[in-house]
Amino acid sequence: MWLTNMNQFSQIDTRLIALAKQIGASLETTVGGHSIDGIDVPKDKLAIRQIQWIEGPIGKAIIINQNFENGNLEAPNWDFINIAWLLEGKTPAKGRPIWNKYLLKNIDFRKIETDIEKLLKQSLENLNAVKKTDLKYR
Image (cartoon, rainbow, N blue to C red; front, side, top):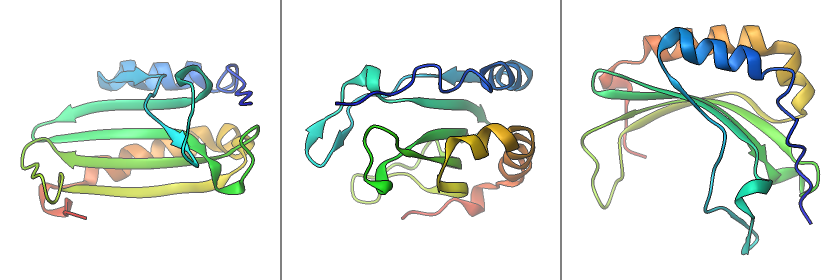
């Protein structure tokens, strides 16, 4: 049913790996535990790239993931997100204080390929500017 192109990231992986190494971060390429309309999606059919690191009390990430709002499970659109969260302060009722910003939402993957340098630069600027006081419970 799901035909995720595992080479989807071939045009940008080298750049993502280089950035992760440059900032001492990890690059995650798998995600699990996801369902769409109540149907479990096999882990190997979901595509994601997440550069994640910690600065002091704040976790930070640049995330490129599938967005199924277009209703096409075979060819989903994509989101490019910056997120920061407080490592401590998690509560059962409120979760963690977070900050997030969508640089792109529900778009064709080619836009990410075309603008990857600009998106990564903007992401680092955004995430470097995040302060503890910017993190809010949702």
